[in-house]
Length: 127
Image (cartoon, rainbow, N blue to C red; front, side, top):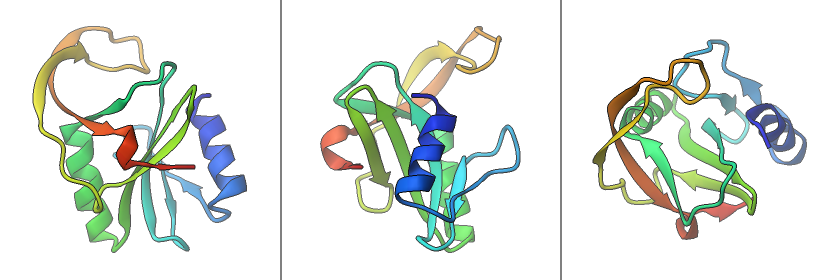
């Protein structure tokens, strides 16, 4: 599943009013005003028991959702399902520094240090 397919699935099954973010580099992917959800989408090609989130992305989701009076959600698809994290309902991850690709979706494969945390699949709601 890719992000467009995940977006389409969520729009047809859960969030009929789901609207994509307008910018390529926005810190979120979509919003449901009716549900009050400010959402970042991530698609994984492998299933993990804990799903990575960058600290920068986490902070931006929390701050920008709060500014809009929405709830920050991080929704991940894996080959075993779709997992939704309400970031206000779970503990903030412990942050660790890892050498990672500067970007996963574009041609820049240079490695940079990133602060990342892991969200346990068991803490998510399976959609």
